[in-house]
Length: 249
Image (cartoon, rainbow, N blue to C red; front, top):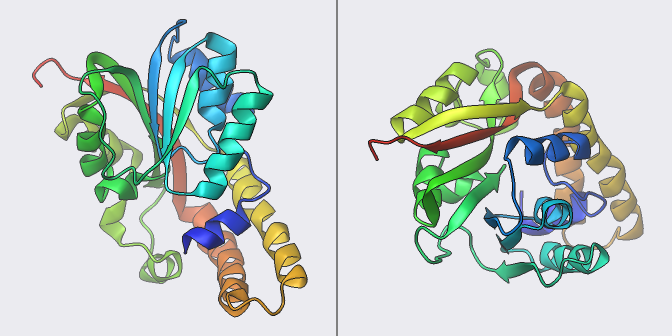
């Protein structure tokens, strides 16, 4: 799915993951955020997490994303919440973005572990700017039950890209992180994230029938419906995992 398709499909979203605002607020409580906490959010999307927590807790943050469209929305949201002086949004590839080492209390990457070619590589990227006693927040898919080949084909995903919940915890441990907490998406969270894109894309296609990308987006819309209804809801879960580095790293 191209970046433009994401920008179209998620144009009506504030949270670009299968997560509710209530769960985002609950995650903030779990993280024990204090005023002045420094937070780096890789692939930050529209900056909803940073702006919400800056307004609620007084943290200071940096969000990194490759989408100008999403970053414009993030900056507008920061002004709306009165935290434009507390958060900074940077247009950059999160996979290659560099910052001062050991300088953030929280480093997050929700739903974009492709930046490190998977969970393990993304944790390596997150480790560099993280303070030794800081925490990471990773939004990651997991298999509810092992998917059959036809599900993998429909989801365009290799089986070993994700693993079970227990296997996800093991991947954290193998990377030198201790899993502390987690909040999992519900089927309804998935529906609100994925199914609500269908109407958005349908409206865009009606308004832009002659756009060169319209045929490809129409095909994506059709495949998105089938893969979600037939496979995603049955086999794929998603959650935000809270972890910190183990003492031997």
